[in-house]
Every structure is written in C-alpha cells, then in structure tokens.
Length: 427
Ligand SMILES: N[C@@H](CC1=CC(=O)C(=O)C=C1)C(=O)O
Image (cartoon, rainbow, N blue to C red; front, side):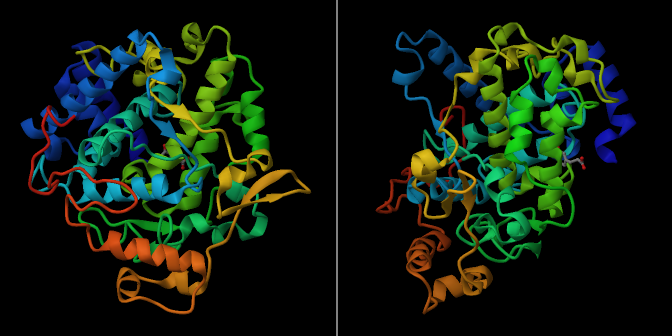
C-alpha cells in the first residue's frame, strides 16, 4: 500500500519534520508527484490559494457581523435544489479548472491540486485527517473560485441518502449523467466529467466497501470528545473509517489515495466528511481546545497527526489550528435533506414516510444512463421532462461554453480561463 509507504514517511520525517516545514516540504509531502510539481508556477499558485484562504479567515474572524452577515459560501447537498445554482455550478467550475492550463502548460490546474493528494499518506489514519482535509478542500474551492467566481463550493454528497436505497444503491441518480457521470463501472464516458483533459476517471461502483448509514452518523455524533471519533480501533465510532468504505464503494480511481482526488466526487465526499465533523465539533462545548492529543501517535504514518504539525510556514497553520473556528467559519452547511424540509426540494430525492428519511431516486432511464456527450449534443428524444431539461442544460455545458458567455442560469466571469494565467490577483 503506497499510502503506507515507509520511505515516504521517513523522507518526510528527516526532510520536513526535523529540519522544519517549508514550501519544498509541502511540495514533497503533500504533493507526491514531486518532480511534476516542483516548479515555481505551481508553488506560486498554491501559495496564492493559501493566502486567499487566510485572508478570508482574517476577514471572517474580524467581521463585526459574524457569520450570517458576512456572506459565507454555503455547501449544500449535491441533489439539493436548485440544480442550476448548486450542482451545475460545481460541475461547470470543475470543467473550467480541468481546461485551465494557465498555471502550467503541461498539467491542467485541476490535476495540479489533485496531485497533492497523490503523495499524501501521513495525513490519513489519525486526527490530522480531519483538519488536513478541511484545509485541502478549502484550497480546491479557492481554485474553483479563481476560475469561476466567488461563492462556488463543493456540494456535499450525503451518501446516507443512497445507503437508504437498500439493494438498489448502485442505481443511484448520483451516478447518472445529471451528476457524476456514467457508466458505473470502468472509464466514464457520459456526463460533465467524461473525456476531459488530464487524468481519466474510472469507477467500480458497489464492488466492495459500502455507504454511510444514518446509524453510523448517529454513532459518531453520539461521542463526546474528538479522541473517540479518531480512534481507528473503535471502528464503530471512527469517522475516517466510515469515510474509507465510501472510497472503496465508488471504486476505480477513488479506491486509493494516490488517485482519489482526480474524481470530482472526491471533493463532495469530503465536503460531507467535513460537514459531519463540523456538526460534531460544534457539539463539543470546548471544541477549539479539544484537539485529540491522546491519539497523536496512532498509526504508522502519524507525523502529520501531531497537533503542532504545520501545513506550511507562512502563514502558519498547524493541525490544531485546523481544528479551530478560524477555518470552520469559512463555510456554512445547508441542513441534511429530511422529510421536514421536503428533502431540500430536490426532484432527485423522496421522503419515505415509513422510515421518515429521504432516499435518493434512481437514474432516470437507461437512455439517460447510457447517453454520451455526443448523444446529448445531438439530442435524444422520448425521455422524461427532467431529462429534457437536463439535455438543454448539458447542450450548453458540453459545448465548453465560450468564456464570457452569460448562461441564463448565472454569469460566468469575463475572462478566458484557458489562456489567461491565474495569478495572486485572481485569487
Ligand atoms: N485506502 C483506503 C480507502 C481510501 C482512503 C482515502 O483517504 C483515500 O483517499 C482513498 C481511499 C481503504 O481501503 O481503507
């Protein structure tokens, strides 16, 4: 298991931990593809994203009006209405990043960010998992915002809605062309993320692993300290462990940390991981002080699970700070779809009154399932209204929206992301 590669861990320990953390170190250990990313453009870009996050953290922390008034970007469930202002925005922003070669001409900007996870190991299997992935997700969203405009976020994928489908889980509309694309096994050829530049996306839905049940979430939330939810020996309460099984359930490139972040569903899964963590964190009265110190030494690759581990030097962000309100305040979460809120008004969820929970709908028809980008572009007939509406949207989207073209749905920034380099100014 390369995630547990000892050489990397040792390398990290001597080069980074003992000699002090710096940007080189950041690149070596947070960015596996060392050689690929060991360049000025990438590090300047990543530094700019860090600056953006921290300047927002400063602003939010100093805001007199606190969270509500400060326009904090919201993360909603993937299927929450309105589609055009939620998932569609995310899908378009991801496509922009995938077509963006403004940082490096040989590597698209999405893949630059995803590569950071490729070499990750130490930030898994322990408490640092929660905070590191929180920061990593913010970094990705900062990049989305740089090419697509302020406010776009990674919607959260609440996989308990799909868990509730029982033995029909692999038919979930999540893996239709309206959302993350099809087919459910092998390279995806349909939907927003098919045939994009850079790393190909593969899946193997429902081969192994599993989804997260409401009971699992309740078990995690029933604990009273962080130490209890990061302890890998207590699988029943271990939030990271529940997250692992979803990676395996999606399969394909999501199955291993080396490639997981190249699937756009990665960020939505982690958005959900972060949401539940945040619910938990807010339930603890002493949340900011409750760094799980007792579990720092857990696991073979625990370097990054030390509370005083610094992601990078300037501004300094330690794991412990990653647990603080400073970064938590940068996002808000829409409540989980429930029968009480009409399942977030989603046409793709329904309330099961006998269980009093929302359940995901299945992918609309086999036509929708199997449609490729070309099918969509050429138009298909005889399908449901939902799919017709979707087709209309996708016809525009899949043409790769000439930059600056205002869709009726929302405005796109008046820049050409493919030719205009990102700079500190943009972010
Ligand atoms: N490798 C993990 C699952 C997994 C965890 C991750 O954090 C990841 O990024 C990808 C995959 C397991 O099989 O248990």
